[in-house]
Each structure stands twice: as structure tokens, then as C-alpha cells.
Picture 1 (cartoon, one colour):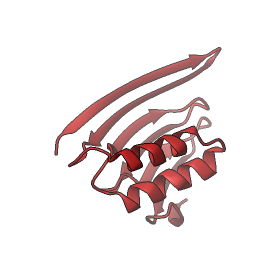
Picture 2 (picture 1 turned 180 degrees about the vertical axis):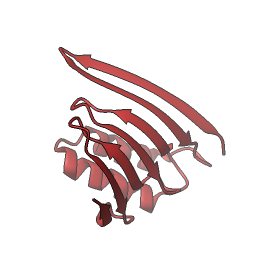
Picture 3 (picture 1 turned 135 degrees about the horizontal axis):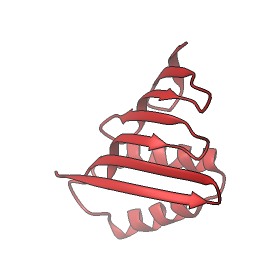
Length: 119
């Protein structure tokens, strides 16, 4: 398995987003059936439902698909965050500072549920 580096930047009017990410590469390629299932998930609307479905897909198929591991993000809302994911690509720790300067640290379980939050 190898790692890839992502650099992403978007702007919509005055809103800007940027991200640097490190990803683990899959140990095998998708089967035709997995490709179809993944394409359906990617086409889903509703951010929360789509995120949950993609997380469940990664858990069910851990040997395929790129897995985001570390992301450094500057969001559209002005938040700065470091997100660290587990081996299947699910966020488990987020350290951030919101646009108003308030810091936080969040720990998540494998389903994305918050287990601890500071402050």
C-alpha cells in the first residue's frame, strides 16, 4: 500500500475552502459490483446520509478505495481543523479553531458519534 497527497482549493464568491490530505491507497481495485455501489453512493444527495453511507461502505469493504487518513482543512466558514482518521478512513479525532477563535477537540467512534469533546 502507498500513500497519496491531496491538495484542494475552492472558491465561491468570498467563501474559500482549502485542504491538504494524506491518504492510504487500496490493496486491490474495486470489483464491478463495488464500482456500481460506490457510484450510487457518490451520487447520493443529503450530506449526512451520504457521509454515513460512505462510512458504512468503507467498513464493509476495507481492502478497496482510497482511505483519507490525515486532513488539514480551512473550511468555507473560516474554521481551521486537523482531522485524523482510522485505517478504514473514518474520522476519529478533530482538532479545530472556529472562525471566532474558539478551539475544540473531538473524539469520535467508528460510526462518527462523538465520544468526548473539549471544551
